[in-house]
Image (tube, rainbow, N blue to C red; front, side, top):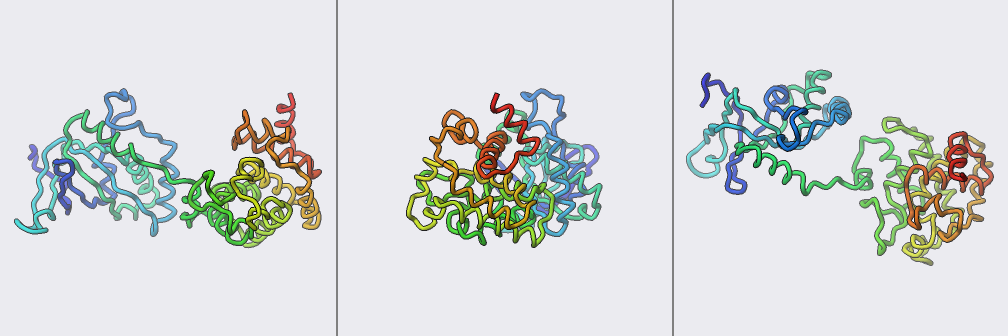
Length: 361
C-alpha cells in the first residue's frame, strides 16, 4: 500500500456515488488538523481545488465549539484521497460487506473538498479546550481523480447550498439571546403575534403578514442597543414588549390590518410603516425614548398617529426609499428615524444630526 506500511484505520461504511466508491467514517477530532490538508493560499485559484481560507471566520466558529462543548453540532467533512485505500468488510455477504475497516496510508495527501473552515476551527478550539480532541466528526472520503475532478466536486457541493433566511435562523436559534427576545416579542406583542412571517426574511405580495421575525430581531437590537453576545434581562424583555405594544396602539393602519379591514399587501404597496426600515428606525427612536420617564415616552408615541406614512409623502423619498424603492441600508434607517424623531418632537443625537446635515446638502 505504501513504503512504510503505516496506515490510519477507521471503522467505516462503504457506498457508491456516481459509480465511484466512497466511504464514511468517524474520525477523532485530535487527528483532523494533521490528517486533512487544504491548498496553500498563494496557489492561484485555477490550480486549487477549493476557495482560499477566510481566517476571519475561524474565531467565531472556534468559539462556538468552545462555548458549547456539550451541545455543538458539526456537519461532515468531505475529502479526497490521492491514493488507493484498503477496505476490509465485516462479512462477505449481506449488509456486513459494506461495513468494515478503512485503511488509509499515512503518507498520502487527503484534501478537504468541503469543510476547510470547520477543520481550522477544530484546530483552534482544541488548543483552548483539549477535551474536544476526544470527540468525533464524520468524514465522507472519495478517491482523488485529479484536480479537475476535485474542483468539480467543490463546485457541486456548494452549487445548491442555500443559506437559511435570517427569520428561520432566529426562530430556531436557542443560544442567541437576541433571537430569544425576538421570539418572545413576537409572541407577546398583540400585533406581532398574528402578523409576523416566521420563516422568510422578505414578504411576498400575496402574504397576509406585515412583519418578519428577522426585522423584529433587528429592531429589538436597536431598541436595547445590544451587541451580538449581550444578554437580555427579564426587565428588558418586559420593557421591549411594553414599548412595541404602545407603538402598535398608535398605528391605526396596523390595527386595521390586524382586524382584516385592510390587506397587508395594500399597506406594503402604499406605506412606509409596513416595511422593515421603519421598524428598525423605530427601534433607534425607542432607544432614546426609553431613557425618559414612562409617561413621557408614551406621550411622545401618541404623536405617531399624526405622521403621514404614505410613500407618496415627499419626505420619505431618499430617506426610506431610493429611486422609489424601499431601502434598508443603514443610512436610510437613520434618516427614517430622524424624520420620525422630528415629527414627535425628539432631538437628534450627534451622529443622527451629522447624517441629517449630509442628507440636506
